[in-house]
Image (cartoon, rainbow, N blue to C red; front, side):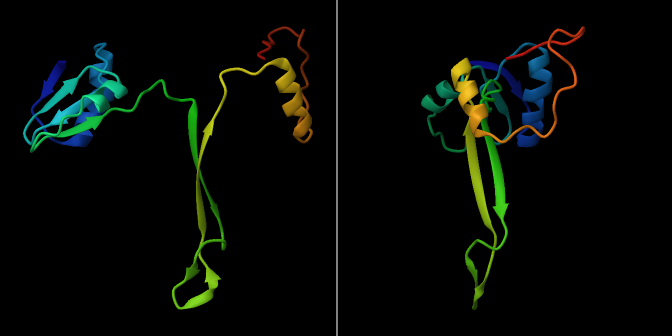
Length: 140
């Protein structure tokens, strides 16, 4: 379902429009299609956009990332000197890059929280305030 149209094919401008102008107007955009001269904004979910993808010659579809998908957290780490050997010098190694995707659970039971705390080292800093002090909110 087309909800808006733009007379530009600049992808960066279109991404900014999705994030700022259209969200301010209350229009949730799931994808936009560029046909070379214009762009058409579609109101759908990410899954609907990927399922309805029909290749048309001269058209490119861009799927907008889901803003509610914050549970998956991606981290990249580098380990110096543990990568592949360099060209013509097998004794010198490059860096190893690890792309880690971490999924956090929705909630943890108190028993699981206690088990995880027993596996972790002691905290570096101790809290100076108590739970019953004024202005303290306890979140578990």
